[in-house]
Image (tube, rainbow, N blue to C red; front, side):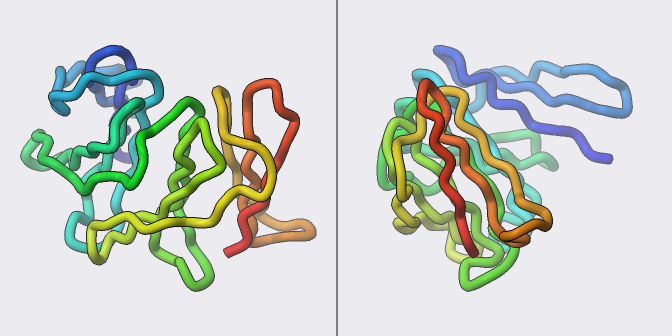
Length: 167
């Protein structure tokens, strides 16, 4: 089992690794050189020109950083089309026309983006059908049931809204 990259998401751009084998956190310091406002998120890139790296994005920013585990360093990633807001989250798309891409919910809006690892770019994703993404937003795969390939998106905040992404 590998280590997990954790972007802290505070007023700075600090990060740590969690090692489940040793059950410990290792602080790796600031790497993004950004002022961060709120949510920070990360996802592992499994294919394309930056396979094996984490793409990190930060609240209040359109800038991203690519974390290279081998070199233990950050480099500038592609800019997001819009600034990240509260409740932002992401999930990999494993089936359908966008398989291999990652869907990023912007947060604070009903907007999403698709990250394409083959071109290292973002394009507009689907608009949420209902509500906006806010704090405590999360998502989970259906893994069976009526919509076996869908991902459920819980909007978060005071809303009791769920959107369903069909690949």
